[in-house]
Amino acid sequence: MAVSAADVKTLRDKTGAGMMECKKALVESDGDFAKAEKILKELGLAAAAKRSGRATNEGRVFSLVTDSRAVILELGCETDFVARNKEFIESGEKIIRKIADDGLTESTPELEALVTEVVSKIKENITIARFKSLPVGDNEIAVDYVHGEGNIGVLVKFSLEKSDMITDSRVKEFAFDTALHIAAYNPLYLDKDAVDPAYLKEQEEIFTVQAKNLDKPDNVVQGIVKGKLNKHLSEICLLNQGFVKEEKKSVSQVMDEVSKDVGGKLTINDYVYYAVGAE
Image 1 (cartoon, one colour):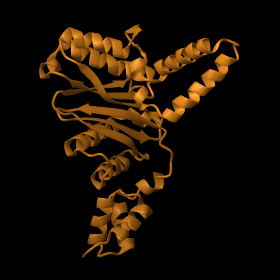
Image 2 (image 1 turned 90 degrees about the horizontal axis):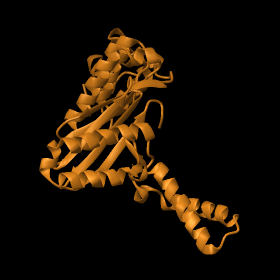
Image 3 (image 1 turned 30 degrees about the vertical axis):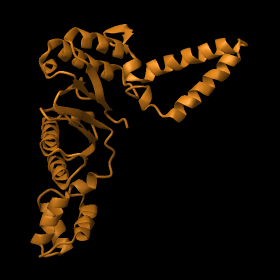
Image 4 (image 1 turned 180 degrees about the vertical axis):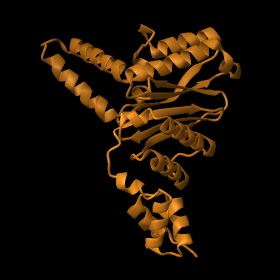
C-alpha cells in the first residue's frame, strides 16, 4: 500500500525510529499505526523514543579525508563511557564514510537509520550533532586532525598554485601543523574579511573611547586604536594569529615562507573546528 510522508512523520515522532524503518513498518502493517509501532518495538527500534529526550552532552568528533571530499562529524551521546565504546566508534566511522561516499551536506533517512541502529545496541540516546562536508578539487588538499579521544576535531583545506605541490613534504608538514594550530587556538575567523564589519566598527569605537581617556593628541589616539584593533584581529583571525610552532610569526607569514620555498602559492581556503558539546 502507499504510505504518505505525513504518516511516516507521525510514526517517527511517536517512536523515535528512523524514517525508512517507519515507512517499512507502515507498509508491512497495511497502515495500522498500532501494528507498525509493535513491529518497530519488536525490532528494537522504537526503544530509541524513550531515550530521545535525554541530553547528549558527551560524544566524539570523527574526521575523514578522501581524494575528493573532507568530512568532519560530531556524534553526540549521553556519557563519556559510551563515547569510548567500540560500537559507538565503529558506528561513527560508518556514518562519516556514508557522508563522504554520498557527498551529503545534510542528514538523510539513511543516516538516521544508522544512528537508530546503534541506539538499539547501546541503549543510550545518540544523535548526529552536526557535520560539515568540504569538496576537495584539483590542486587542493585537505588535512584533518582529531585530538585525544575525539573531544576536538579540525579540517583545513588549502589551494595550491601547482599540482606537484600536493606531494611536497614541506607543504604537507605546514598543512598538518596548521590543523594542530587550529585545534590549539580555535580561531573564530579565517581573516579580517570574514569578520562582520559591524563588529569591527563597534570594537573600533570602544578602542577609540579607551584611547581618548588617555588624553593624547588625535594622531596618537589613531595609532593606539589601530594597534588595539590589529592585536584583537591577531587573537580571533587564523591568518593573523602567531603560528603554533613559531609564535613570533603569523600564520600568513609562515605560509608565505613555505610558498616561497616550494615555488608556488599556498592558500588556506576553509577550515572547520569542532569541540564536543560546543556550537
